[in-house]
Length: 180
Image (cartoon, rainbow, N blue to C red; front, side, top):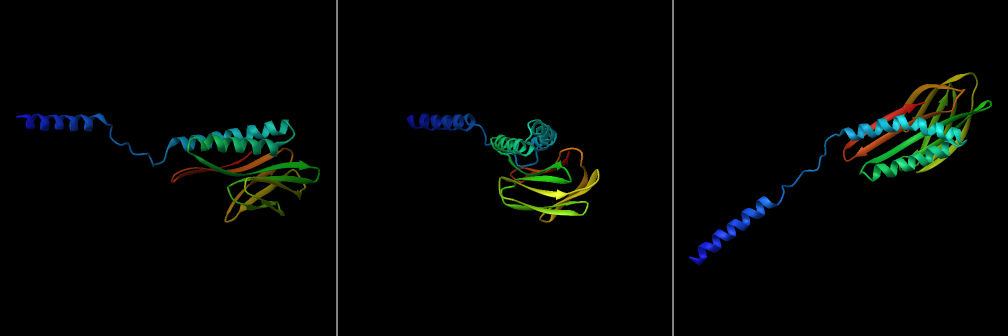
């Protein structure tokens, strides 16, 4: 009779342990809306950071600090943020172009302003500048990095920014470009 109590007691303990522990929850690996939300937030805040930099007479430095802050904030949430941005500032008959490279590896950016071409080398997590001769009030802009390129119209009477962001978590990636 004692043996039956031990068997019933062990079954009850097994049942309690089975129902007492929560089931395993699979980590979500599909696409999520928070990456889109972060990318659209960056697209709207980046021109504001440029304006703050223009007001302090150092747009490239302010954008560099904003980029580092954004990367750290995203990384704290398990999101990898990489970006490349270009700041265009007119100085007389030339356009000063500052390239901020936060892609994790060195890049050479080809910039074409209505036929005036320059290449800017930027090391990983670094900013580098060059000047391109311009004339008129606007230029057709072509930016080329590796096999990718983007085009747009660039006004000469204002400081402008081109940025390409990659927001990644696991297999999900959202890419967004801005020209403001």
